[in-house]
Length: 169
Image (tube, rainbow, N blue to C red; front, side, top):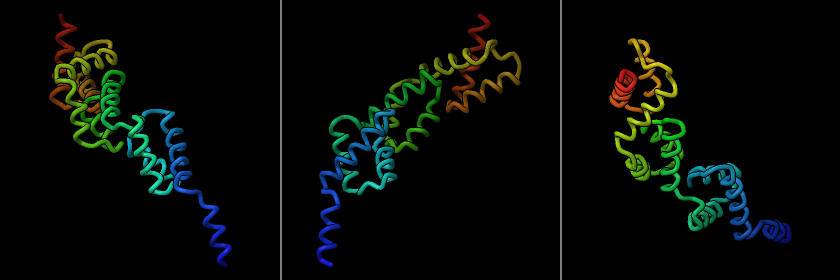
């Protein structure tokens, strides 16, 4: 009986091996795309990695610069604004669901001012609509697009008006 318990204990990997296993899983997960601390933690938990090994791996990844929620928030915000035309509401929601701290989200969103947001929204409308909205129905479609992308209603109205003015000139 004592021998069976000793064999089971010796078969269990030591803490360093568990930490290395967690790191290997995390590196593989990070190899696909940038991740937040929470995303990596959830991935490792899903792989049934021991909590102490998860914490050790996350600490090491943060120390090495592979996990940086502030940097992630900045890059995500810029990419979604420029590449996908997302507004601040949608970006904030996505970052929050990825586990980014509210203060880091606010800092990332504050990097651009309202005139920048307006410019991105107008550019999105130009890409999506060949002609500026000519009637109420077309204006509603343009507004709906911007609101779904995470822009506030007031900014969306301003963007539609700016598009109409720029096309009229």
